[in-house]
Image (cartoon, rainbow, N blue to C red):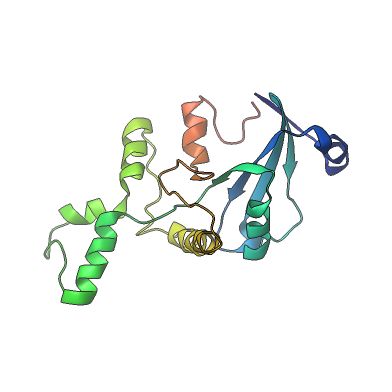
Length: 185
């Protein structure tokens, strides 16, 4: 598949022959730090349409996702938290217990990264930010708010990556493809 950058004027005239569209969202905790790009597909060729100069508020992001022409949405933000972390918080809230005692960090390490994060780290040698312990938690909370809104509207939100909405990790993907951030493929 090939994608080429084109401005809004050139892509508007070609939209009639569009077969599908893919939306990529670099979701940050704040709208002014959020980015998005849409690729309109015409067979194996795509036209890249970034969304610059636009504050990507929750409403704008939801409208981009709701577009019926968009068949796949990749969101660069965690879709959830490590199960061990969530379980520990629930146990702490209800029973004032914690899974490991003073001086131990063995269980804590399982709470920092999700199974997916650990697999990426093992496979690629790139340690993802821990959604339970890093600032990426703010983006994850925004993502959860958006996914919950979409789910309440009837959108199927399958956090396994099997649905229309998928969690993506661009830095890891670039590494898999032998590219580095900032390279122009």
